[in-house]
Image (cartoon, rainbow, N blue to C red):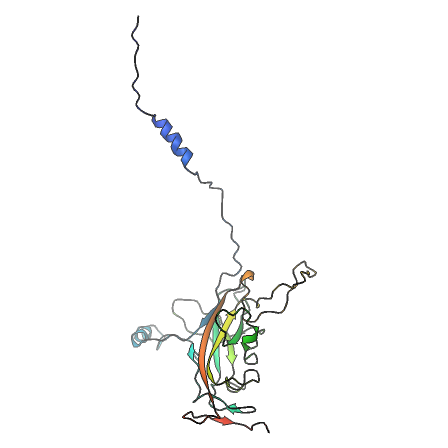
Length: 273
């Protein structure tokens, strides 16, 4: 009789480990590609003057043709909105000779068409004293005669100096000034005067028309698109790919009829009583 040979168990072979490893891995499908259509790659931004140190200006002076660092001019940085003196609520038919003079708000958007010209229209709107959590901004629209919210910003024709970047395609909102007079924030909010006290003025820009909600009837236009209601000024149309930016100013209106240390400069005739 032959002898029976006994095999010693040495555990699963290497092939079983390979099978188990393959079963636990996700093998990538190299044929899957992500397709993204970006219709608005450039983000709109408000351009403000940048504080420049003496050391920075010295460094810029080493660049040929630069006496100091490039910057935008004739604009107003965010913060306190100042005039020639105390800003005052003067009463009906009166104006404030201390009111801020004209200024410009610059906006940059890098989206260009095939000819290299600015592609998007830029819209801007003032909003006054918007409380936290407000959803309906229509009642806070302000100074629409100074900046009409449905009129796109003008193309700025001045060539600004730049360092190691393309020439910016700036748009500009002209706020009062020139032949438009001063920006009488306390007495002429589209013909209305402001209550004395501290106020916040926000300026919002966007590179699409303002959001207009669908008509509640659900009706469609001739092209099958939902009919839209009135535009909500100050609300960017994010669903349409809009980008937006904002800046804010604060100012205080003094009651010109109250005695005190304020130096008001009201002029004009009060309405007869």
